[in-house]
Image (cartoon, rainbow, N blue to C red):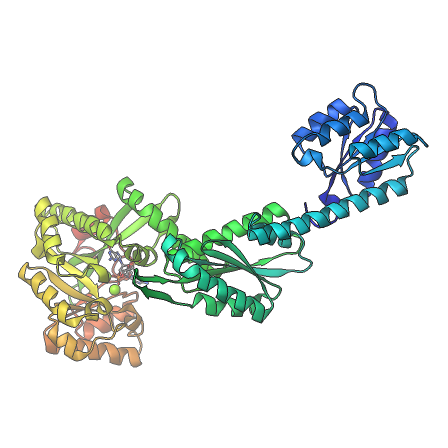
Amino acid sequence: MGVYSPENFRVLCIEDEPDILRDLADELADHGFRVDQACSAEAALGKISASMPDLVICDMQMPGMNGLQLLENLRAHKDARALVPFVFLTAFSDRETVINGRKAGADDYLVKPVDYDLLIATVESHLSNAAQRAAAAKQSAVANGTVSQRDVLVERLTTLSADAALAVVKADSHTEVARRFSGNIDAVVARLSRAAGVEAFRLNAHGWAVLGLDSALLARTIEPLVQLRLRDTSRKGSARATLSGVIAPVGKNTPEDEANSLLDRLMESARLLQREGGGQLLEFDGPEMSDVRLASSIRAELITALRQGQLHVCFQPKVSAGSGAPLSAEVLVRWQSPMLGHLSPATFIPVVERAGLLSHLTDWVLRQAAVAQLQLVRNGLPPRLAVNIGGSEFTADLPDRIAAIFAELGAREDLLEVEVTETSMMADPGQAEGIVNALHQRGIGVALDDFGTGYSSLSHLQACPVDTIKIDRSFVQGVGESGPDQKIVLGIIGLARSLGVETVAEGVELESQRRWLAAHECDTLQGYVISRPLRFEDYCALLRAWPKAA
Ligand code: C2E
Ligand code: MG
Ligand code: MG
């Protein structure tokens, strides 16, 4: 039941005279009330059990069960029926009925023929009293802990008189976190809401809602809260907690079911955000929140995707800059998800990596590479392939993992190259050197991917004996015309030569870029001007067609 407003209330009219019943119902409906009708006390009982009205108007004299008996019946129950406001209609100056009705627990009476102004005034006064009583009861129920603050918030949302903003803030759901930190967070929420003049509500052990009329102000209020890093190192061991927040606009007088659904969706979004590491406040409808939702779906879908064959690999040729001869191909993963559509590896690999699932994917790609290599060898085509290895996979056990997969399938590891981004490789240059050496012992080549975008220092490059440097597309783009990119790429080629390292230019899209790179002694080219990444059959066809295609 909302705050007093006629459309929030349902009035049941009970009257055996059809004309009077219709007039009563029309009059009430004209004043905005929702109206139900019954032509007998028996019919009314059924309607009341099915759905509780907010007020009953009942004729006293009816065939069968009369109004007084109906009232006694209702008041004998131990539920809401005993309390429903009951107004009876009686004949003029029937004093005895009035007294009996009052004794039986009627709230008011009206004399027939009905004065409709008096009828409406009576109904309004009883309903607004009931609404006030309900609000007061709810407040004391919250104070006693019998009604949730969530109910109070939903009630607030249904009666907001202006547009506002609502934020949900969430901590981790572990009981340990709730036990150790929810008191602290409660205190911070209370302090923030006092300071900024916004209202805070506790939703559950690890969730809070904050309502404010000005969304920018609300965001500024919440921001310090979600940036809290809680740490507790008591004798029971250490625990940490982060918080996440999601904020959405909320209109005035939001219907109750919409308010509930908005709250549920905000809580779900905050949960997803929290799983991504927390520490942020995002807009519910913003692009960053969409990314978080996508990340969460990706995580959920990946294992199924691997099992159901939604992933496939493509092969992008690398050719000699001088002769144009195909030398090898980079194996690039593709995901066509029935749920999420086509996903770019740049989107899903980081999510898969954060979810700790990249090893599944890497093993799967390595298998695809091994199988493809066997077919290339069988068909007398250039069999060298390169596989991308994510930063978290570039660990000391990588050489053995590759060896195990290639041995199982009977493929040759010495025809494989791994591409590792400069950033991953240089995260721990000392360890990287050991891994590169171990890969070399097995004959596996190592390429430094996206070179120029990371932070390798020349001394690291010297210590880490990679075979190839892949010059990042961002530099290659500019080499067709004179400018700083030409100087940078010339510098990289010169540096690589002096270290005895091969160069591959990535993302070569234009003839002018191809010509310049060939003229300046870049060894190998890869990019759309040569070929887009291809399905395996198409890659084989391209290899067979060379040198005719060159
Ligand atoms: P990358 O290793 O630098 O791969 C090159 C990316 O550049 C590929 O994007 C490729 O399709 C794209 N590309 C190639 N030539 C051109 C060109 O001429 N113009 C433009 N605009 N783009 C070109 P893709 O396939 O979307 O892959 C993106 C990144 O995702 C890759 O960058 C790599 O870091 C990662 N990735 C792809 N497959 C795998 C995989 O199996 N495992 C791991 N760990 N990462 C992968
Ligand atoms: Mg690569
Ligand atoms: Mg690259």
